[in-house]
Length: 192
Image 1: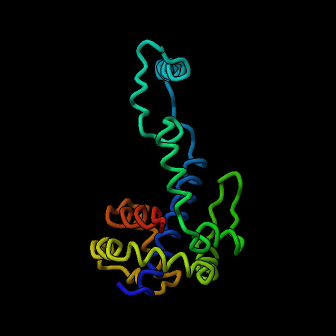
Image 2: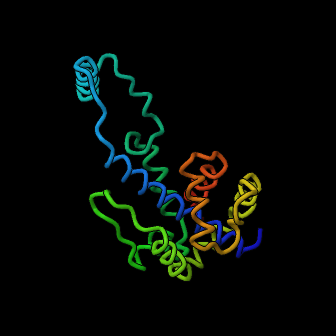
């Protein structure tokens, strides 16, 4: 996969993930609350009480071993990794913030897809160093993920318009495994 193709995949995977999250959150918040029976309410209260008041004699602290925030060694490993990380310019989130991405603080209204996609394209130049570092380290892995994508959509390795981007977002929202995997893996890329 060449650098330009990788750049498109990087940008659109992030955009799909962000928009998918915001749209799912808005749908969840606007849905009517589920009906809860008195028995379910009592069961939920008991579970919540147990979570807030663990029994020290039976609580399994080993379950938190290796999890940052709960394990000092894991915290130290994360700090060491972050200290060793070289700055490669703004990340996707930092670049999008720089071009003014905003959305309803209450989470009720996701950003409109068209204007958001315009901001993705506007932020592209800010991310060049970061994208290059990701491509140099992860290009082959991302190319393998791209080879698993549905072939009936416009190539995610090229510039997408609103009309060609929307089917990718909809496929992600329909939980297409290959699209979800690509989005999750690309959003997790952190060059050293």
